[in-house]
Amino acid sequence: MIELRAATLETVRPLRLRALREDPDAFGSTLESEQERPDAEWAFWVEGTLIAFDDDVPVGMAKLKVDGDAAQLLGMWVAPQSRGRGVGELLVRALVDRAQDRPISLCVAETAPAARRLYERLGFVPTGTTGTLRPGSAIATVDLRRATSARVCARPARCP
Image (cartoon, rainbow, N blue to C red; front, side):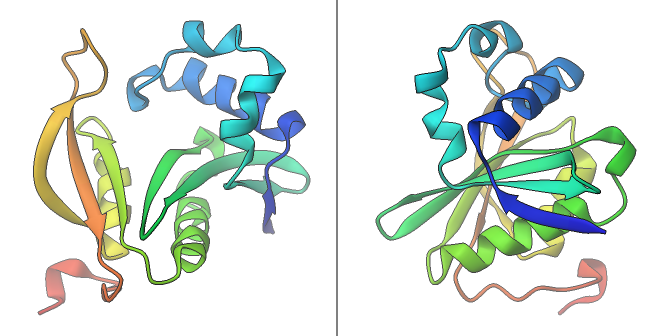
């Protein structure tokens, strides 16, 4: 059974580094830039991050950064062996609840169509803004946003 817990330095650091190592083309940051980060600088990833555990093994993470009346979803990742089991949906739904009435924005790589489908199923829509994953990267990104009144649809292709 999947359980969500607040991140600690001991849980978020190794999971974030694993995510950057296993899926480097899913993040704006790189393993090289984060693996040498001092412990004190990991507070950004500890605060507002949820870790998904499967029998006490961390298998996913996502962060909600709240800034006034808006929020951003950052650093979403699910371990390959746990994909397709609803872990990502649990994380996103929990962070949407935390955001309360704030709209939430995020950036997703075009190389992650399953992640984009998840976000869209949960009420996120393209903003029309695109970019690249990081400076020097050829990987395209698209920005998505979920309004506070977004309707969640189990089958988006069939929703009016």
